[in-house]
Image (cartoon, rainbow, N blue to C red):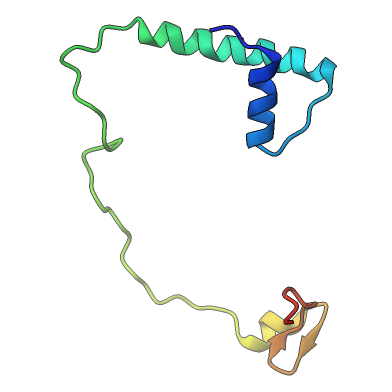
Length: 97
Protein backbone atom coordinates (compact mmCIF):
# COMPACT_ATOMS: atom_id res chain seq x y z
CA UNK A 1 0.00 0.00 0.00
CA UNK A 2 1.39 3.35 -0.98
CA UNK A 3 1.03 6.14 1.56
CA UNK A 4 0.05 9.34 -0.23
CA UNK A 5 -0.39 12.88 1.00
CA UNK A 6 -4.15 12.40 0.63
CA UNK A 7 -4.07 9.46 3.08
CA UNK A 8 -1.95 11.45 5.53
CA UNK A 9 -4.31 14.43 5.23
CA UNK A 10 -7.34 12.21 5.81
CA UNK A 11 -5.75 10.59 8.88
CA UNK A 12 -4.75 14.02 10.19
CA UNK A 13 -8.30 15.26 9.71
CA UNK A 14 -9.76 12.25 11.53
CA UNK A 15 -7.29 12.73 14.38
CA UNK A 16 -7.88 16.50 14.41
CA UNK A 17 -4.18 17.14 13.72
CA UNK A 18 -2.33 19.43 11.35
CA UNK A 19 1.02 18.59 9.79
CA UNK A 20 3.47 20.74 7.89
CA UNK A 21 4.79 19.43 4.58
CA UNK A 22 8.17 18.48 6.08
CA UNK A 23 6.43 16.50 8.84
CA UNK A 24 4.41 14.51 6.33
CA UNK A 25 7.55 12.80 5.01
CA UNK A 26 8.38 11.46 8.48
CA UNK A 27 4.80 10.31 8.97
CA UNK A 28 4.88 8.62 5.55
CA UNK A 29 8.05 6.73 6.54
CA UNK A 30 6.55 5.67 9.88
CA UNK A 31 3.29 4.48 8.31
CA UNK A 32 5.22 2.56 5.65
CA UNK A 33 7.19 0.76 8.38
CA UNK A 34 4.00 -0.05 10.31
CA UNK A 35 2.30 -1.47 7.24
CA UNK A 36 5.41 -3.50 6.38
CA UNK A 37 5.38 -4.94 9.91
CA UNK A 38 1.70 -5.88 9.65
CA UNK A 39 2.34 -7.46 6.25
CA UNK A 40 5.18 -9.51 7.79
CA UNK A 41 2.84 -10.78 10.52
CA UNK A 42 0.28 -11.63 7.84
CA UNK A 43 2.80 -14.11 6.36
CA UNK A 44 2.57 -16.34 9.45
CA UNK A 45 0.65 -19.58 9.20
CA UNK A 46 -2.09 -19.35 11.82
CA UNK A 47 -4.09 -22.43 10.80
CA UNK A 48 -5.14 -24.34 13.90
CA UNK A 49 -4.25 -21.51 16.28
CA UNK A 50 -7.10 -20.72 18.66
CA UNK A 51 -8.00 -17.05 19.01
CA UNK A 52 -6.67 -15.47 22.20
CA UNK A 53 -9.50 -13.97 24.20
CA UNK A 54 -7.73 -13.57 27.56
CA UNK A 55 -4.03 -13.31 28.35
CA UNK A 56 -4.27 -16.04 30.98
CA UNK A 57 -6.68 -18.77 32.00
CA UNK A 58 -7.55 -16.85 35.18
CA UNK A 59 -10.90 -15.10 35.02
CA UNK A 60 -12.00 -12.31 37.35
CA UNK A 61 -9.15 -12.71 39.81
CA UNK A 62 -9.81 -9.89 42.22
CA UNK A 63 -8.33 -9.02 45.56
CA UNK A 64 -10.40 -9.29 48.70
CA UNK A 65 -11.95 -6.08 49.96
CA UNK A 66 -10.15 -5.02 53.08
CA UNK A 67 -10.87 -2.11 55.35
CA UNK A 68 -7.74 0.02 55.58
CA UNK A 69 -6.91 3.12 57.53
CA UNK A 70 -7.60 6.26 55.52
CA UNK A 71 -6.88 9.90 56.11
CA UNK A 72 -9.43 12.08 57.83
CA UNK A 73 -11.28 14.91 56.19
CA UNK A 74 -9.18 17.41 58.13
CA UNK A 75 -5.96 15.76 56.91
CA UNK A 76 -7.22 15.73 53.32
CA UNK A 77 -8.04 19.44 53.42
CA UNK A 78 -4.87 20.40 55.29
CA UNK A 79 -2.78 21.19 52.18
CA UNK A 80 -5.63 22.19 49.88
CA UNK A 81 -4.84 25.45 48.08
CA UNK A 82 -8.45 26.53 48.56
CA UNK A 83 -11.18 25.07 50.76
CA UNK A 84 -14.62 25.97 52.00
CA UNK A 85 -15.33 24.46 55.44
CA UNK A 86 -15.60 20.74 54.64
CA UNK A 87 -14.91 20.78 50.86
CA UNK A 88 -12.19 21.45 48.31
CA UNK A 89 -12.87 24.71 46.52
CA UNK A 90 -12.17 24.79 42.79
CA UNK A 91 -12.82 27.25 40.00
CA UNK A 92 -16.00 26.90 37.98
CA UNK A 93 -15.78 24.05 35.48
CA UNK A 94 -19.17 24.32 33.77
CA UNK A 95 -21.02 27.54 33.21
CA UNK A 96 -24.78 27.28 33.55
CA UNK A 97 -26.74 29.31 31.03
